Image (cartoon, rainbow, N blue to C red; front, side, top):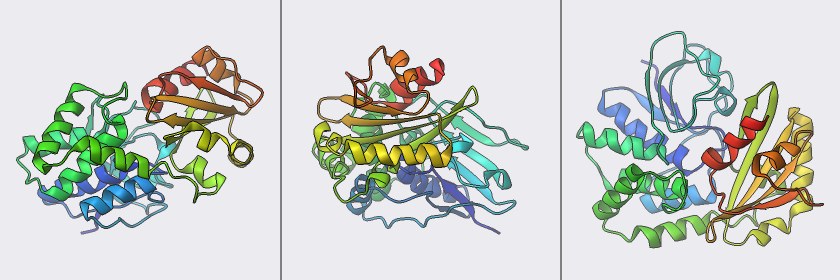
Length: 307
């Protein structure tokens, strides 16, 4: 029997990678022959989490063959998914985002809840099904929750995320805040990446009203450390706009300490950002967004609504 492939979105973040690995464990509990894979490079934050959990990275794929059975985690939109996804048979989705551009020919197992993190949803399943919890899997889920909720500070964070966070912290016998700060800081060192790599570390593509946009986000402890590279970042953004025929490229530099973001917006539809956030882009095509840290809840919805 061919393996079922489990994967998160392109340009995977910590939740996408960790949830894929956790979902592999759940699938095997049900007797399925499954393998967690990824749709892009592992970032520094995720690498830190995997090393702490003593879990090896998973292999990378770029497309799928005809009839390949897959389970999607942490996404459902085709623009964010594997190439040639139309070839696959989607047998399951476990997600915490809006549902868009999604349909299947056959029924499937679909769980989507408005939590701050996919791993919170998976933790609920593990508890409900009495699946054995080990330290590796617990570390991965806690890491994902820390990442997606910015240590419970994000507006996407729910009580379910908090409950899972504290239960996993107790199970592991660690100080989750201390661990989480070190993990988040590990992901803020962007000095080793080219400008093109920086804008693609965590970029998601969206479509609305025949407009194609990308919203990219990086975390930092100091916005100026990233913004000082504005010219090369904008050059990379302009190239992406031309190559991918984008109407808008939004790049968020998010301060994980002070919980706000600086946005750079380029493309024919850049005025959409001004309307969505009631701000004026300056001569650098940038603006501060106070209290804005969540792409899912605070950035994508208002932009897509204005488009």
